[in-house]
Length: 273
Figure 1 (tube, rainbow, N blue to C red):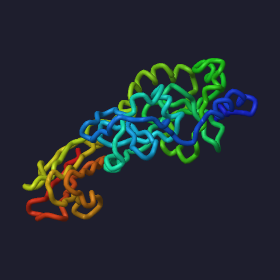
Figure 2: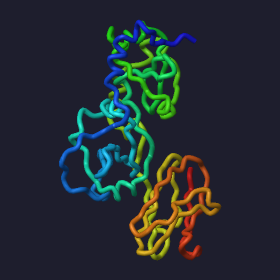
Figure 3: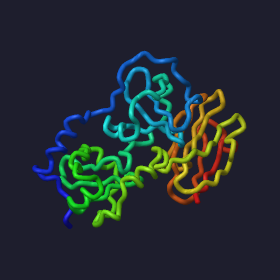
Figure 4: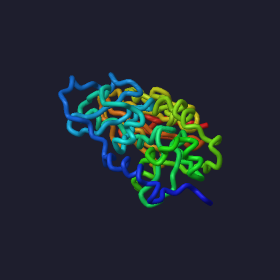
């Protein structure tokens, strides 16, 4: 199968792009306002802690998503003006949901060990471009200056889709418009909340669709957990105010309990349809 390869001759403009890539996302140091509590954050916020400069996307599901490098970040945002500061302790309580991938349509990609050139489609999908002629139709005569190199270690963040045989099979503008936010590109939705109270779980049985996140929140003054009956998954110890979020992607029924309470009281079930 003949995919577009980045040859030495075609790489002249590409190398200029590669020279400006930075290995990690770093936020310039500056004075900042008071740190925010997690309850003050909104889905879609950009956040960072006090000690380290890494920037994260705060998702609708209550998880934080990592920008693996500057080049990924700048396909979504122009600057760092809207980054909100939270304490290191608060940052540590927000689980990591995964990596942010390139915004579809903005750039083409390749990896260090393979010269194949890919277009980025929605849902972190990479589509190999069949020829230079197609690349020119999609990105113009400067197509080879619009390619970023993804380290091999980040390649697993993407899925390989069908290749592009005709320019009509892919539209950079349409892809970019559909990915109006990171949440839209990843298909993130709000989590279903189950509170742990002194009387047990707030909902003893919860029915959700496959691919939904459930957050367990300990509202008591005692330690508790949400532990699957056969210990397939579990939150570990949750102190007062702590929470744990898990995605449920397989259909079935999951029974769980608190290792710190009476199982006749602290028992629940999640039905995944």
